[in-house]
Amino acid sequence: MAKESEVKLTRFELEVMGALWELGSASVRELQERLPEGKRPAYTTVQTIVYRLEEKGAVRRVKKVGNAHVFEPVVTKRATVRRLFGELLGFFGGSPRAMMAQLVEAGHLTLEDLREGEEALARLEAGKGAAGAGTDEGAADKNASKGSAAASRKAGEGRGRR
Amino acid sequence: MAKESEVKLTRFELEVMGALWELGSASVRELQERLPEGKRPAYTTVQTIVYRLEEKGAVRRVKKVGNAHVFEPVVTKRATVRRLFGELLGFFGGSPRAMMAQLVEAGHLTLEDLREGEEALARLEAGKGAAGAGTDEGAADKNASKGSAAASRKAGEGRGRR
DNA sequence: ACTGTCCTACGACAGAAGTAGTAGATTCAA
DNA sequence: TTGAATCTACTACTTCTGTCGTAGGACAGT
Image 1 (cartoon, each protein chain N blue to C red):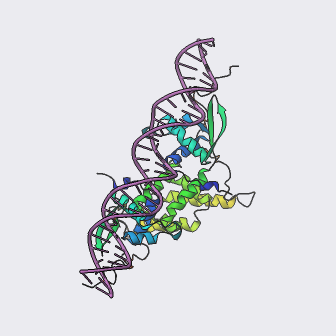
Image 2: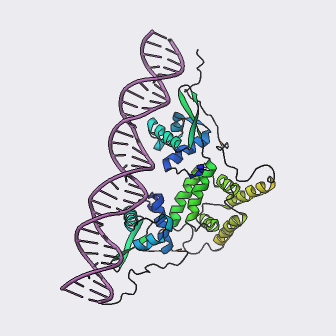
Image 3: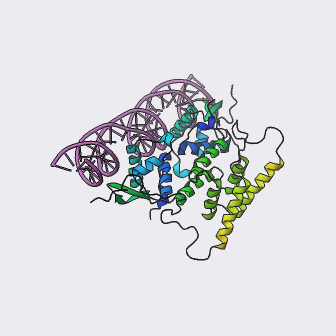
């Protein structure tokens, strides 16, 4: 079985995926508008990226709103972060410890951050043993942190004609 | 001043830099041989990468051993890890905490790893206040974890004749 | 002085990535 | 039914990356 987490994404593709993970699902235009002002490419540029992401199997179109396709992530943020984290680890001989040390020394991680990690660990310990928990994976992240305002704007809003 | 940490490195370039950070300084051949067997490209391929790294200002040639140039990193591992880590953070809205949580949940970080972080932090607390500590940066990492056996092999070894 | 080995400097290329324009189909509101 | 506003599906181009090959220079040993 072709591991979905095998897909290699470029920086820009990751950028778009990031937006998509946030929105949960979105149209090309929504994704474009979600990109930081500074580096916001033309609509068709984003479209191309989305198409390529589709070819790579990282996203898929789920429905149409108005005449626009709405895309949804296929590869999870989790799986992707895993991969990227792994690459980072590579620089430390695969030792998370060595990495932690440097991150802390460089001031990227505070005591609170570490504590949070421990708490997460505790939470995990507590709520496990039940149904298939653990490394889950499988479907797109449902952890859309912010407003999952998919399909808003003008694209298919107050249209009920016919 | 042009931030040296601004240099964008590709995956493969990072791979080579990783080898160079380990060795401290090395010739093209040494770098090539340090790459994992599976994906060890031709000598000239590595050479090209090194040249491009030189153009980007990520490495520089420090001397010649025999007739081979010896390169040394200019951008630090630390600065690079910082950048990459920052990119990862981007997926979590810049919140190290959120990231820690996910990393822990995904089983990438164990309690020991977190502890190590805390210890590093403690060490930091303890040994600070003295000479220029802190976020240092500036010169190439001197933390060559393993054998900094730069310039070994045949390239300029047992050649003392004339 | 000759020769084999190892480097360096370039030059080439194919494929990936980034960036967009265009023609034609859809949709929506008058 | 018309027209403006959008989209989609291509097509195109330029850079960037990954990969090498080759010609010619340096050296070390014979």
